[in-house]
Amino acid sequence: MNGWSNERAAEIFPMVLEGFWVVLKVALVAGIIAVALGLLIAIAEQTAPTWFRRPLSGVMQFVRNTPLLVQVLLVWYATSLYINPEWTAFAVGSAVLGVHYASYTSESYRAGIEAIPQGQWEAATALSLPVHRTWFAVILPQMMRRSSAAVANWIIAMFKEVPVLFAIGVIEMIARVQEYQGLHYSGSLEGYTIAGLLFLAASYPVAVAMRRLEIRLAKSHF
Amino acid sequence: MPSPTSNEQRQRNGPEPIIRFDRVNKSFGDLRVLNELSFDIDAGERVTLIGPSGSGKTTILRLLMTLEHVTPVKHPDENGGVIWVEGKPLSHMEKGGKLHVASERYLRQARQKIGMVFQQFNLFPNMKVLRNVTESQVHTLKRSKDEAEAKARDLLELVGLSDKIDNYPSQLSGGQQQRVAIARALAMDPDILLLDEVTSALDPELVADVLGVLRDIADTTSITMLIVTHEMGFARDVSNRVMMFDQGVIVEEDSPDKIFSNPQEVRTQDFLRAVLAE
Image 1: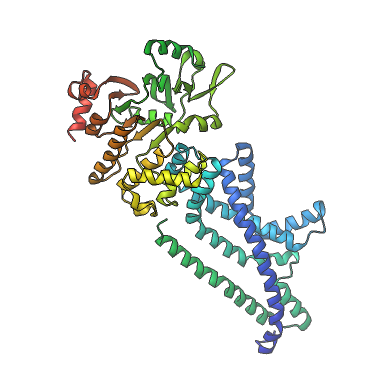
Image 2: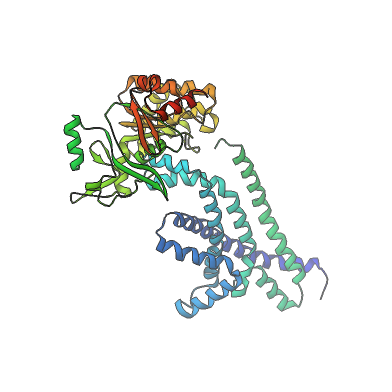
């Protein structure tokens, strides 16, 4: 093993950065899935008929209680065997990561919905508001206020787990460092340090922004 | 088509009542709250329901608002267990000349002529005052935004809150919030207004404003009102009939003057003594 070298760090930086863009792209796709699908699941759990709700919560239990790595590998091999071997690791990996975190965000949304006083539903009924209006104008705005911080925390956690997709061959940062290491028999120390710093540089501003948002929500009249 | 019972009753009573409870049952699990309860209310009446807590008063309002549903009776056509509003079944719907348990879609239509003001106000906290009053006008009654806003402004003026239209409910006192809730209910042009302990959650000094607004409405409109309240002075001023409930049945009913000054039943006497001693 070689010690830290600034030259190697400079050499490996562009490669790691390239891997970082892939991480950001995965995080964007998976994040959209986690935010949107989680919401749909939470609404379905409140409104769908039992025959749909039961299996849905069963699947969500499974997703929450098995390791992400196992799910990624399982879905990757299963889809390439039975559905379409052409699907890219990027697409499959982003989808699995998104669904995995949707199972968590849906819980945060659910908590936000259940915290809304029963009287809000009753007022909407008393005014005969259409169901979609009750959800979009009354329930969801109040839920977002309660759930947004928790959901954002899940997205940050998800962002940090993108490197798991290395296991199915998504060329993100770990893959890049290993590529360099394979060629030069060194560079892991510098590469992983840079990877860590890039994650920090991306996560920290989001965490700060979230704290600001929480303070603003606490101060607002609604 | 009205049931045989209501035809019979109509011939007896003259004009059709706006609200008819026909042997209505309501149970929560094993607890029977209403036991074959029957009564009629005519259009324009102001009826106050009094009685100890748990006597079923609030349940009656919640059944009318369809927030609760009657406990089904096997043959509603013969055995009752049906609530009628304006000559049409509210708890049930008619299909092929028979009464069936009402669907959510039917209820949406059936409840539109009924408005309710709640003990806890239940304003939408994410909407400003004006939008609280326009929301259902626009989305339930499909009024234009301009029309809804004009109506909301009028009603908010009526309840004395013209200067609060751009505030959120959390910026208002409890009494102000309740007055917005009254405006919101009136915006739907209800024929029937249900008032469920509307001053019980208010600080004492805020009660008078809310009752003042309700007195105005009672004086200037012909809306049928069902009032559950512990404000006996208000009940006496506003209502033309008082029903005393206990354990899901009507113990006694009469004009407020008679009920308050000369109650006949022991249970009414005991209840009034307890309430007025407070």
